[in-house]
Length: 282
Image (cartoon, rainbow, N blue to C red; front, side, top):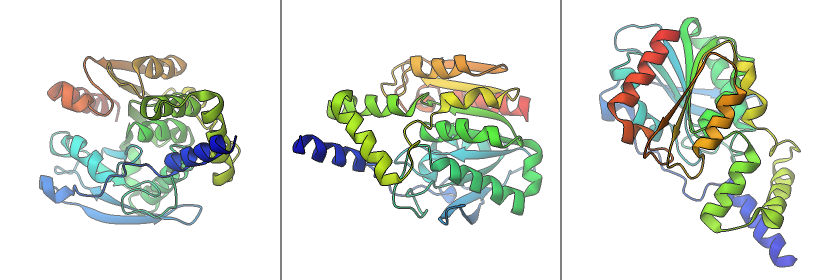
């Protein structure tokens, strides 16, 4: 019993502190992009840092960008800079709490990160209100899940692209624990989630799941993207979220793509479909 408790406490620490946290090593100047450094406060007092990349052609269309667990705004920029260079959109990237340059002691993979999304929206409203006229959102993995949960509160977001979102928090934790540590859900992961609730101080941290929120985005359009070889957020999970969403909605499953590799596999088609989607709906 003592060993199970110790392992579970350690497991909660992994969820709160990603074991492969990426260093910020990619910057807009690497792609010849002009940008403005931004920072803003969350409602619980953290300072988040980001970049605002203006449209190269003066387009009003703007995208709020959300990165994955253990990643940062630079890694997301590396696979989405085409949204500026080819798409011509304004882009707001920011590091979620405890990632990149932002403050924070831990990540909750969705629950508290919705606070970060709300803070980014508040920044736009206060500093760049013109961006709200034609605003969309793009999220990858955790960023997609956060967007699915946060956007219902923001009617200003008129369309969204979610790549590899998870429908339920407990399911993705269970799958990650099995894929990476071969730890069964019962009883160890159940105890991990108990420690997680205790350490975060929120009883709903493991039930704060996109599938409870996704239907509220309608009638705004959502494009769901999944990789056929994604072992963390498999197509069945993304499809479950798609089916719970209301029209208008689209689902694109990219053959041969693993988690976070949809752009790498689909290449020009990936770029063209996302740009076309936002141009159509913003």
